[in-house]
Length: 324
Ligand code: NAD
Ligand code: SER
Image (tube, rainbow, N blue to C red):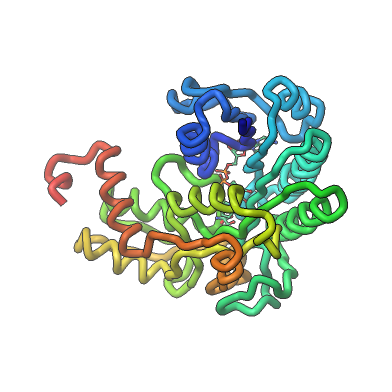
């Protein structure tokens, strides 16, 4: 029987992963944890929730003992833009927090999923169709912490036989929970602003090309990788995965197919632009496709339609706008 612990479960990914894992493995078998209390009633009440700081190693092992945990999805982290504003905190949470989780997973023989990011690449990485195995010299604290995470997870697999697995996610787009302070957050905000105000001011340049993925595909990727036959995995930490690629201008054009009056303006934030410019234009995810069958469903067109439909159902719009 799987007993799954999720750290950072209130975040953009965790809030949706928790519900998906509860659906798949049973509500009582998925323990959601975070340093914030959930405001979402389903997340809070439909299964166990524990306040858990990944910087507290004793508390981690206590919670694992109580619930007899055998699998961990470690999502607690500081994202790229916040990481540049608070590099010390980013190192503490992303590296020291991960170390505590790795040690607990080693002691209790748990399988461990840890997401890396396109942020693990840097300016000297080949920018187009970035290969699975290539140069990784990022110059952001987020990127440095993500490369460190990939290396230490591989080390624990090689040295201690820990079943650690991970993916390098591109920007993730979703409507359930706000993103936590990354460089790709514009690709979520733009949908809410398009529906509310028919206008969006983007902090990245119009031609900034980045890979992206819709959250349902990201959830599938995590579960599919953790359920994959280990004998097929030549890589572990971490697999390139991607679903689509676009610039802010191209996304705005796609939104205009549904909201013709939509306008986009640009007011570039130099810090987030510099981070985005250091990341790949696009990833080669053939290793994930070959080793565990990765095959995303959502294109930019399908994602745009679904985001607009789902957000429309959720937000209060003046009645004339609802007839979009
Ligand atoms: P998020 O910021 O939305 O959520 C992170 C959660 O971690 C928050 O709920 C926060 O309260 C919690 N947290 C922070 N410090 C903690 C601590 N000390 N102990 C326990 N919890 C703590 O982030 P997310 O978007 O859900 O990202 C989850 C993981 O996926 C991260 O490792 C991130 O780098 C990676 N990732 C995300 C994206 C994306 O676009 N969202 C893309 C690539 C990789
Ligand atoms: N979406 C994430 C960020 O922008 C990528 O890791 O930080």
